[in-house]
Length: 302
Image 1: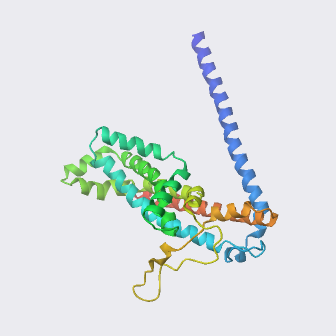
Image 2 (image 1 turned 120 degrees about the vertical axis):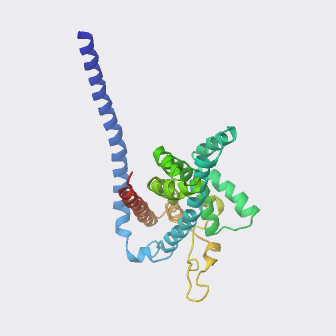
Image 3 (image 1 turned 120 degrees about the horizontal axis):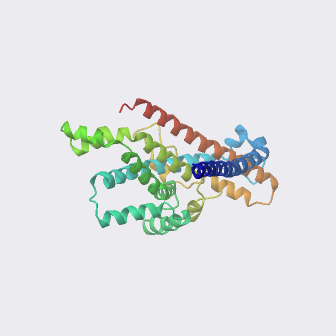
């Protein structure tokens, strides 16, 4: 009885020690983030204005802005989203529902998991050799978006598979018992019910893509852009203009990198302001993900 009491007491002490260590490590991350954000706010907040958001880069730091950078970021992320999500979801559905369980499938799954940890510059080198030099697509918005799509594709596939696996098996069995085909089960049950997890994984992937710099620099994205790509919608038939895909571009991380590398302190303030805009973009994307997840889960009735 005495030994049992000592064991229980020792276990409680270990819990207390583990809680203290966990709180300390958590506080290290929170404090570090708070210091970084505070430094950005102090340096960059005075530069944030409508003029900063609507001006092109300039040799004068007081006149410089990020118009071409944030427009380029939105266009590149649009291409990334339109490419990575359909391909990633389709690949995940195939691997989870259709693919035979053999060594080939296992090899593919292992490689997809490993690709999620490959450094981003490797994707840039692959895109430079394949898309720019082999397919002659140029250093364009299309190539930038496809490069980031390749980068985040493993994340979309893995998160989608996990979302599909989380659906209770009795839903599949009930649908098959009612005479549904495999495609009908996927189309009307698995995809809708796993949409919350798919949306979460997709937004996490886009949050990573929006901050990537190395692969875009590798493929030759411009660091000084004083123009905007053509608008994707025009007033005359056929109303859709695909010329923006072939336009040169820059993005917010590259604009930050360009200004940080300059010796003038005023450009460093511009870089800090650009960092704040990038953080707002990321928080907005995560906010949309949380809202979609809440709406989708609220409508689930298992």
